Length: 442
Image (cartoon, rainbow, N blue to C red):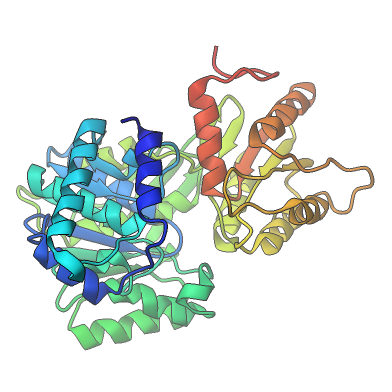
């Protein structure tokens, strides 16, 4: 069964499931035999940067010769992207077999077994895979939560990491940074080292209090520790003082300033991780430089940069990276977002930046897409109320085609942001080599 059919099958089976409590999932996890618990787990939560921190951790450990499994979300093209072992996706047959195995194990648990959501299902399939493969390390990305997240069933991680905290998913997590930080801090465990980004004094106080309650060592990481960070055409120079690795200097392979922050978090986590034989500074530098992750200021096509920024804090980081990138021509923007995000604030931030000469707004291929009224409102914000401005597009391929035509006439670069759904659509278009005016891959 191909990826899309399998994804549809799982979504249909989970259509009526509601998010389960962590306690209920833990009982299910125990009944499954606690799969994956024999590996050293690096548990990562936060608002922005989780996927990149996971990718850095995976790249360093895999590059140093260790067997590493990694679970991340969401996916861009295929749900199997969420499951990696030593940098390779799980195979279709293996995934299908493990999914069927999970369903049978759940059936055997009887009426007491929870009805799993899509995310919970994928998590348990991943852990069953890890039980078979028995990697030395597992890099585990939390979903939107922390202590109430399905991944919190893991009880003895080797290290926890909490990335930058921002206002996102407020309906689930809280309306202030402190409330959201308290939720994210739920991944912290007794006596386990916890690395966090020093988002603000208020947020760090929340983490410090939680660490004190758990007798856990807290390692806050601030921008002052990234001693040198310089953006180049397609990379960022990175330097971090390290007592463990005689300082770290690497070339991060994307023109995104925020990746210096994520790399610093990964290095601090690795410093607290028991690795045998110990990692060397050169291995850490090589792993950071070799990391690849899609939709993080990725040049998806010549002169077309794709970023997964999908909330106001992410857009601010995106803007800083675009502003730092030198370009002789103009800049064009493609924006699409889910209706339940703070689309107005994101659009206002993009307009106020003054970076983009023209903008196209598109619907995304999701039930969460903005409707026509919302699309038109965001288009007007981005274009500053321009008379006779461009109408929003019903599909991302049409929007990209228009921008490619426009860019060809003014030697402009195109930047795409606003949604991981949109990012997935653009990645899929590029991979399929779809023919649009202005050209994709030959």
